[in-house]
Image (cartoon, rainbow, N blue to C red; front, side, top):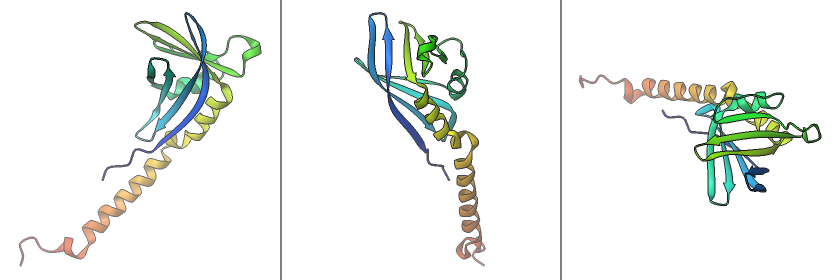
Length: 149
């Protein structure tokens, strides 16, 4: 039996900083039960949505210190007066962008999606699958002799 892919998403507003300035953007953080250690980040940019997938652990560690290498780096905002923000630096072939998210929103997303990482949903689904399989095996018509005798 295939498990449903449960999802949790949080929409928020962030500040996207590009070479030509800053702009307010809609940001979506999402978690999926079938891939609990990943975060899906979607930024609604002028040219259409931009999607990134990266380790959830980067957001967890980025609340308190700088973390990440390569394409995604996360840290508390470097300016002390803006410590209520988390900076997410996204690098790609065409350059990089800085995204500033409210620390409270990121924390809320992490707390809300924590059940996925602990496997609570997958354990429940495993028990349901096992019970369904046992019901099928033990059903009267399922226990008939296949030879027909």
